[in-house]
Length: 154
Image (cartoon, rainbow, N blue to C red; front, top):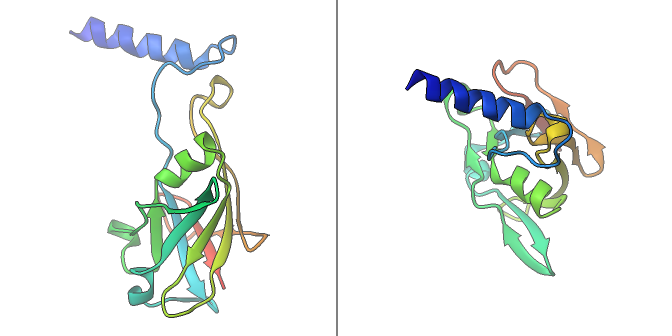
């Protein structure tokens, strides 16, 4: 059993590091995108976060990212939202513009989220190329330890 596992690992490693191929031979998932939403440099209320939606347009039809959640663990109760499918939508469907919709008539913000698709040249991983809020590059909150958390400050 160990030999089979070792052979499988070697095959996956070779397939992903071989620069002569244009295909990754295994399925990857994008890393979870963590973003901290603030107003005037302060955390917004959880009641607003729980009702915040992320939308985009596909062929003229408004659609929603359905996996936008309040972060858990070390990120809980700190104004952080997460999504994993936005990376897939951005890279595989070429959707780069999203709309952060807040409840209670608060203004909608425009997000530009650009992920590259997995390829051998980027070690078969999704790579976040650009993240902007209303045409301004967002910063990373370095106080979080495990994942980059992008700051969306209004």
